[in-house]
Image (cartoon, rainbow, N blue to C red; front, side, top):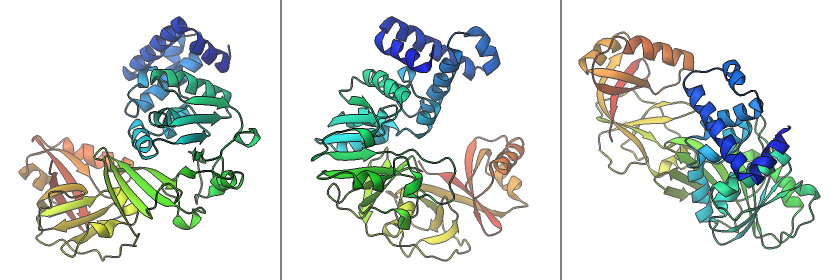
Amino acid sequence: MNVNNFLTRILNDENYAIKINNEINNIVNLIGNGYDKNTLSKRYSKNFEFLYEFAKSRIKIKNKFSGYKFLFMDYYSSMYSTPEIIGKYRSEKLKDNDIVDIGAGSGMQSIMLSLNSDVTGIEKDRSRYLMSNINEKVYNSNAKFINSDFFELNHDYYNKIIFSDPLRPKTSEERLFSDLVPDPEVIIKRLDNIKGYVFDLPPQMKWNNIKLNGEKEYISINGNINRLTLYSKSISANNVLAVMLPENIKISGEPCDFNYDIENIGNDGYLYLPDISLIYSKLLYKIIGDDFHLIYTDNKRYVFTGNKNIKNFFGKKYNILSVTDKNNILGELKKLNAKKIFLRFNITPEEYYKMKNSVENLLSGDRNIFIFENFNSYILTELIR
């Protein structure tokens, strides 16, 4: 049985769908218990490759979708599909519209948009089209899906919003529109009289490579950058927007490059880590005043200190407990009754876990300590809840 026949049967045979869902979820549990692929293949010889990929995908989306135990995605879709929390936020932002999702993939963004709008998802790949129809049932969605190449489809787009989350290249030194499939510029050139457009773009894309005008919206989830979405001016009049989820905090304004010199830490009592959406959107100046001191920066974070306890800071806030040189850090951690350490500076994953494990093996306290770097010093802090 090929994958399309397999998915078609799941779509049309409820009892078979229940059986397959149980098998996939059992494989998920077995993977979690340490079973390898070869061992599992002996238990599930029939359609095993399909079952295994869907199981790996469900592991990947466990924290992205509330209905993950019943969703079908290939592994690429599980990696790049828009998380449910963003899909619902975007659905509310675009509510009461007629939306066409070009390149709908396994259907999750169309399904979320359909909570508040009429949505048609167009997907060229037959397997993903079938997955979207299965997934639509999980959320009782009224989204409609068409299995076709957008560029070959004769469809009326008058007064519709065009949405697309293009496929991204696996590797590219510089993110360009021409790398995306489909290319947003090519889509727009083929359409007349649409109400507006919405494109998901790689968050790392340089602004001078974004060839369409509109609002640049950077969305973070729990402090991690997740989406850059470009909205046409007919939909949103902001220049840039930083959105922090799940708090649903929004900050807009005119973008401005942030230029501060790194300082040696003084006697400040608090350390501040601004939300990354403010960095990507060039809105950091909106929350950082003259009483902040920049002590560290890399491509993931700006780190500031200050004497004021700012209660509603847009990011994470820490108490500074100690400043030490790199030779005396273990002694300081023991004095602070540390149990776990978390390194918040530029370090390779290998070096991160090497340092973390070697130090934690010598600690017996009960506190979580977050460690930042400032020139040749380590700053030992505790997160303020």
